[in-house]
Image (cartoon, rainbow, N blue to C red; front, side, top):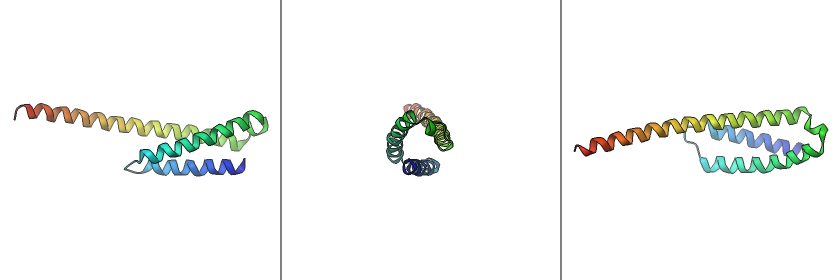
Length: 101
C-alpha cells in the first residue's frame, strides 16, 4: 500500500503543478485525474477490506488531499467559466458593432 500511496502523492503533486500554470493543459489534467481515479478505486477497495488502514492517518491525509484537489479544480473551472463568459459577451458586442459597418 505504501507504493500506491506514494504514487497517489506524486499524482497529486503533478496535478497541483498542472493547475497552477497560466496555460492549463486539459489533456494532461484529464490523464492525471484518470490515473488518480483508478488508483483511488484500488485504495478504496483495500480500505473497505482493512479497517485499520481505513482509520489510519495516511488514509485520512489522502482523503483530505482529494478534497483539496477537487476544490482547486472547481475553483479553476469557475474562473475559466467567468473568462469564457466575458469572451462571449465581448464577441457579441463586436458582432453588434459589425452590423453598423
